[in-house]
Image (cartoon, rainbow, N blue to C red; front, side, top):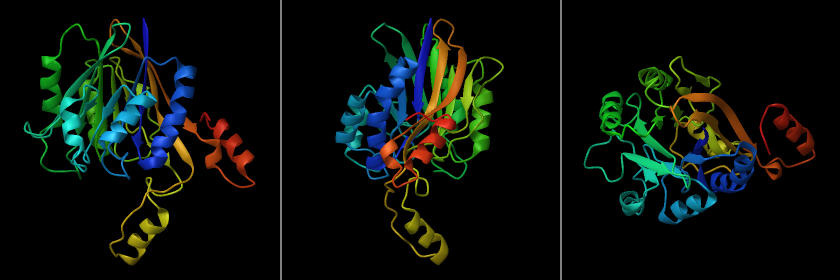
Length: 285
């Protein structure tokens, strides 16, 4: 039996939530999805997650929500992390850190998929354990009957993400990277059957810099003065991948990049040309 998972790149601010809410129904219908996983650590104003947004994103149709280095940016999310069965924090944070290190999502048909999130150490927070040893321990603790396993590597360095893909090839179904907000074009099925991509990209406004207002980012770079970054607003896109798994063995059969673009996010007289360009590039809107 084939099992299709949509993995959505970092959802940024209100614009990211908007395109997520409108894009998911279209992608679910097109790809006949069984499970949706999304990184939501930037959903609240560009950094962190609130209890209210947790509920909204769940209602949008996201089955499992992952967090990264901004997991505790909003204190109100801590009780949600402790009680919710559909959200998890990086597993290699200290053992005392609130939240679940692994979530097992079960569909209405009784199919189960385990989801693990790890955080890289290069150019990231130093107080995290080794992600490789951490994931090894979690896999050893997992029920042998669970064949489908998805691992997110939330990291800055591409080398750490690629290394994790090779480390887990043949042991999990899928490894995807997040955090950099830029989609990579290296999706593939590794030799032992693990689907892999270095970064899913970003779900949110693409008329800025990694989802932030471009004018403020430019001012920070050019003037070298501290400038508060606000979330950008236009060119809303959902980026991610759809992976087709063999539910019996857990092997990845196929992986492809997908995108959904809101037509109304392309204003002005060039809107039709812009939409044609989006369709030609393989994005769906």
